[in-house]
Length: 125
Image: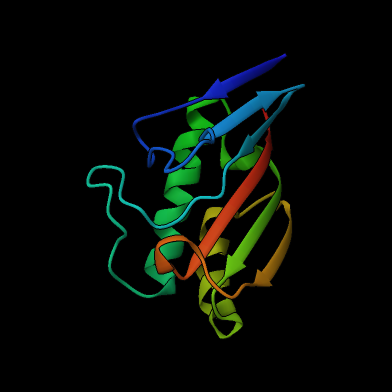
């Protein structure tokens, strides 16, 4: 069974996709970027501020699904520039303090709305 997850505490989808899908005991989030859900705008700031906003958005979506970052089993981090890895990793580590999920981090040519970082998560429901 597949359940669509949606919350106003995270940015609304900007295309034909869901914020997250719950299926077979897992939650799959869409990639989240540094959009402030209250304004719908990309936040100002460097990769640290953007990573924090992204993980707050992911956390809100997981909470709406009845889960949390503590239940994350896998993340994928997309960076516009791999030279931002250390700064992103510093903030990321503050959100995943115990039972860290498996993770891949890749550099990409471009991200939506020209942001610096995008993260998606798979978590236990």
